[in-house]
Length: 437
Image (cartoon, rainbow, N blue to C red; front, side, top):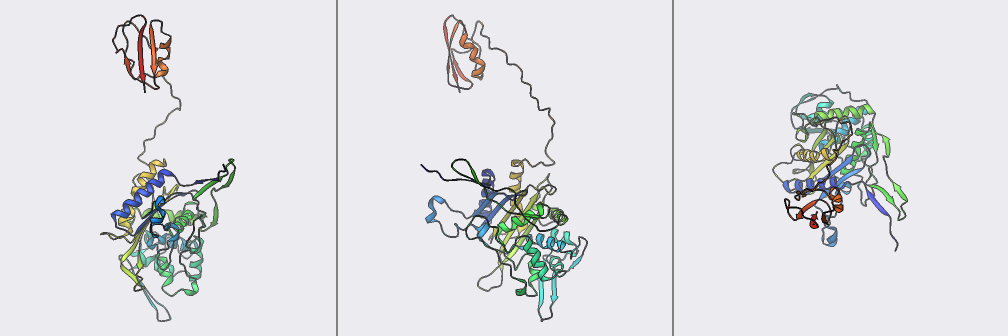
């Protein structure tokens, strides 16, 4: 019989279960069209969890509808909303147009007139006043991000966004991968640059988003994502093995570090990702709520949204990247900060102890590493039978050589019962039966 090659995935079975559980509950609670949950190793780009719902049973593949069979994290292109501001601000910092202390004034909207009689107006969620780069992320200020984008040319902004991998495939071994939609600068209108800066007028895949985040967790170096760990031939030879694979330096190390620190403030009490905050650990996060285009009108819908949240932790030594996308929630809430952020927290509370990520609430003890076991006393039988229940078979082996008693062992493990009962007087040539389990 000929055997094929063995395929080993990067997926962790327990993390996959956690991701699927969170995806299914989010899908049901918020009556969503679909939910995606991704968990990635921040150090090497290995995908540890990949969940999407609605799903299908491979045993009844022919009965499943096409939507359930869609591998959405890699095939579905959507506008990411404000999570994308992380990469917009990082791009502006990398280009040198934006400094951490550069301020913009938000009076509730962005507005600019262009020479071709085009007036661009973008509403903000609030009136934030003077905001810098950190506050643009913390408050998810549309006006601030849009005004910041005015500091660079459309060609420079386009090239730097490309450095994070947007507009390109990740080349994971799945069919139908989308590149997303990111138009060439010569096709941009006056509205495009400020709108892209807030995460609209650009379409991405979920795997592009977590892959882009590896540049922030690896001192600016973008990593190749992996879902195949290795392929082994029937005779045990490794045909292919994937390890940490740098692609390119997307931003400078100091820009990556600054981005993580700014994202950390988003989990503060007045940040939009405060509901994602996990106590006892430094955590960087960003939420997003993107309007979807109504296919009937070609304009943004007033009741169809994509809610999302991305988290990286710990901030000072990133181990995990988690990302949740809720497509078209039809419940009472639709903002990413309200429905996606709490699910990030729920998932994180499962992942952190499983991955042994230390928290400030952990109790730390010191130990020499040496364990001393007391010598167990030898079993003695006097005038009466002792109670032998709960004693291991190993300790009772010397009884087999007892001169007065015929001892019979049945089973393995520890004594469950004995006959005769404890306290029975010992007589010559009596039989003692010990049942183990």
